[in-house]
Every structure is written in structure tokens, then in C-alpha cells.
Image (cartoon, rainbow over all chains, first blue to last red; front, top):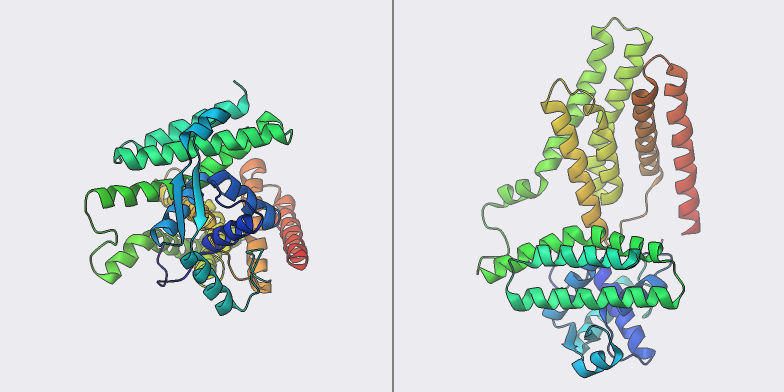
Length: 117
Length: 261
């Protein structure tokens, strides 16, 4: 998809907003499915984001420096008997990009990511 | 193994399939992230008491809706691994044509349908059936041409729906092979384009009255084509009434949806 440098796609806005909200709720870092749920919960009656779409967008945001990620400690996953999670966090640059976007669009910070109709 | 586990296995197979030619580290990261996601979704489903078939459907929908993004990601990663430029080279006109070739085909389909729809009643002596058939095909052609404009200027998804429905009258002409092939190509391309538009979460400007009417016409035309294929030409009353009723329902539904939004 072609777009102007520095602009955010609606899904990327949703990801950053949901990530910040999870952080405010005390979650700190978040994993992919947690994020998909947060987006679906907060953006109204909306299905979970598709796998390919979500992880491609996460990688794009990480490459742009708006998110950072790391694998969780494998011993935690082993203890809980589940696959290891890739944990993400919104960076300062991500917060800044979101704030700039919201300022451009004249929107108050926070959720939801839906455009006014 | 329940339905959700089988759906998760299908996703795991799909991930392994599309990530196979990629560098091991990149492929492994994607597979591991998906394995975690699938585990979390099934665990969450059990925690909230969701039936396994419902969780399975959700998993499969997420897989299907994400396929265009998966394939584009794979293409991107392959290009990066081979050191090729990620932005295609060549002249801007050729690049634009490479991205929008199917819209050129759709425009040809639309023009053909309009021309054929006008010519048909003239050719066949102007009796009621040929006028109705001609009007239907010409309307489909106008819908295709309108869909291109709506897609470019207002709503990509609404435009794609109009394009797909408008190309449907090309399908029954099996004896002239290029026509159904062209129609089917437009329908498939429009469907993929819709999936892609939805996959990036791009939201469009709210539809205006004219566009809602066009979308209603798309639904009506689809109903007319189905009615034509199912009950044949003699039942012109149903043929004429179904589109009007469906168009009205769609129009009212969209108006209500907009009011709620």
C-alpha cells in the first residue's frame, strides 16, 4: 500500500491506541491475541483482527520504531504449559506519532479508533 | 481434538506453507507467534464458555481474511531476503497499470454490457423480454463503470461490491469463452481487493445518498440475476419486482445503519 511517509493506517492507529490503553490498565507489555481482543472490545462490534493483517501491521510498526518487542522468558511459558508469547510495547516514538496524528485529525486522545461519522 | 483444535491445525498448516521459502528465523518467528495466538484464542474461548465450533469459525475467518496480507508479507520478506528492491521499478504509468489492470478489464466489461444491453432490444425487435434483458445488462454495465468511480473516490469496498455484481451478467455466456472469463476475473479481483481493503482496516468516507442508491442497485441487480438464473425469463413480474424490493430493503437498511453510526 502506498501512503505518505509518517502517516498511520487506521489499523496502526487502533494498535497504538489499544497498546497504550493496555499499558494504562497496568498490562505493560502485550501479546498479539491480547491486542486483537483489545481492538475488538473497544472499537465497537467488530471481529478479531485477522492473523495476517495483525502480525504484518505489528512488524511494520516495529520496523518503524513505533513498537518494540521481545520473546518472553521461556521458563514462564513452560511453567504455564503454553507457547511462548512475543510481547510488544508502544515506544515513545509510537506515542508521539499517535499524538501527532490525533492532533492533525482534531481528535481527543484515547479510544475508540473509529472515525467520526 | 475439537473443532477449534482442528481449525488451529489448519492455520498452522497454512502458516508453514506460506512461510516455507522464507529465511528460517523469520519463518520461525511468524509460526511461533501464530502458535501462541491460536493457543490464547482457544484458551480464552474456553474461559468465556464459547462453543468450540464458534471459536473454530472465528479462527478460520481470521485466517481467511488475513490471507492477502500473509501473501503480501511473504512477497515482501522474499524480496528483502533476495536483496531486491521492495518498490517495483519501471515507469510510473506501467506500475499503475500493473496494480490496476483488473480495473481496465472491468471498464471494458462495463462498456461491453452497456453497448450490448442497448443493442439487444434493437436487434431482437423490441419485445418485452429483450427490453427487460437489455435493460438489466445495460444497468449492470453502468454499475461496473459507477463502481470504478465509487472505488476511486469514496469507498473501495462499496465500489468493489458494485464491480463484482455488475460483472455477473457476463457469466452465463459460456459459449463465448472470453466473456465469462473476463467477468469471473473482475469478480475475483474485486473480491480479493475487498478483502485487502478490509485487511488494512481502511475506513472510507460515509456513503452519500447516491452511493447508497448505487449499492442498493447492486444488491437489486444481484437478486435479478439470481432470479433470472433460477426461474428463467417467463416470470417477468418476479424479475421486475425482486430488484425493487431488495433495493428498497438495502436502501432502508443502509440509511438505518448510518443513523445508528
